[in-house]
Image 1 (cartoon, helix red, strand yellow):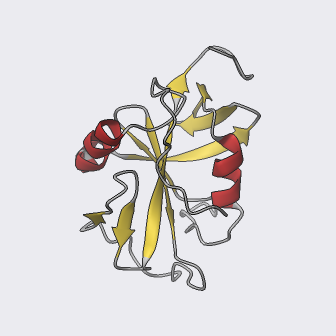
Image 2 (cartoon, one colour):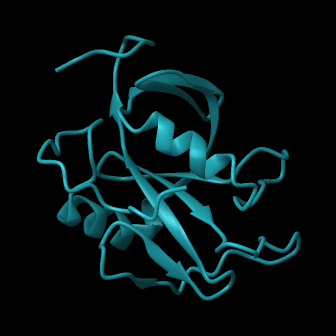
Length: 147
């Protein structure tokens, strides 16, 4: 998996790439975070289950999202799915342990986390890992759109 955390692309509207300010605001809004489940990852879109409702989102970084989830270093929630956080400011957060480490089954996620220089990930002292951020945009369509 590539080490890139924050895109250097210049398209920062929701669903494209996370901007530093967008990331900072999302990471500072911990009280508004919600645990969600990813129902489906397509090409340029994903479906997220939020409170028993499946909502479609545009996300141009679905390849990177799959790479992060496929590492096996993302913790599981109570139902056995990947632990995924829906944050304000159109940000999806995926916590991930560093190479060679895994989230312990009984370890709580440590919320006292310091921001990394990249601005689009947080460092977790619990697992020495990064919390990967993805820009998402709610959409009525369940397939990739170009704009």
